[in-house]
Length: 110
Length: 114
Image (cartoon, each protein chain N blue to C red):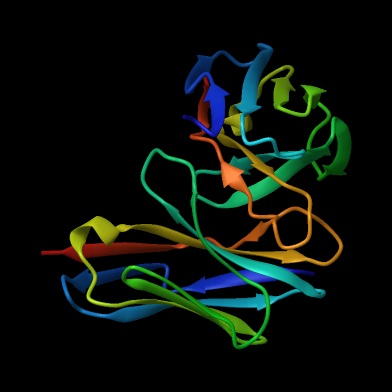
C-alpha cells in the first residue's frame, strides 16, 4: 500500500535557525512527489514537484530534494512568515490522486 | 483572480440534513477532485473527475455523490448528514498531461454537523 510518513510532526525554530523536514514514502511507481504549504484556515498551496531521485528545486528559503525513499524540505534562515504546516504527497503511476502525509507544523519565532 | 473557488466557506447543519458544496475552477483544467481533511489535518482523496467522468471513487459512503455539470465545476452533495461528516472539504484541479499534474486547491469548506 502506498504510504507517506512525515517527520517531525511539529518543529519549533528560532528565526534564522535552519533545519529540514523529512518525508519518507513507499509507492508503487513514483509519478511525482509534491510539497505543499498550508496556513491555518486555508487550502494547501503548491510549492514544488519532484519527479526523479537526485532532483532538487528551490524557492526563496526553501529547497526540496528527492531520493528513492524520501524527500527533504530544507529551510534556510527561516522567518516567522514561514510558519505553517508543510504537507508532502506522492502520486503513483496508476492514479491521479495524491496520497498525503500528515504534515509537519513549523513554528518560527523571532 | 481566484483559481479554484468553493462555496460555501462555512456550513453548519443538523444531523440528517442534505447539503451541497460547490466548486469551480477557472484554470482550464480537465481533472477535478474532492478531498476530505479530518480533525487531525489528514487529507484524503474522495473523488476525482476527468472531463465530467468519474475516475476515482474511494471508499466513501454512498451518501456522498459528486456531480460534474461541466469540466469547470464539481459539486459534492451529501445526504443524511452524520456527526462524523464534520470536516474540511477541499476541491482541487489539475491538467491531465505529462508533467503538468500539479493539483491546485480551493480554500476549503468547513462543515460542522450538529
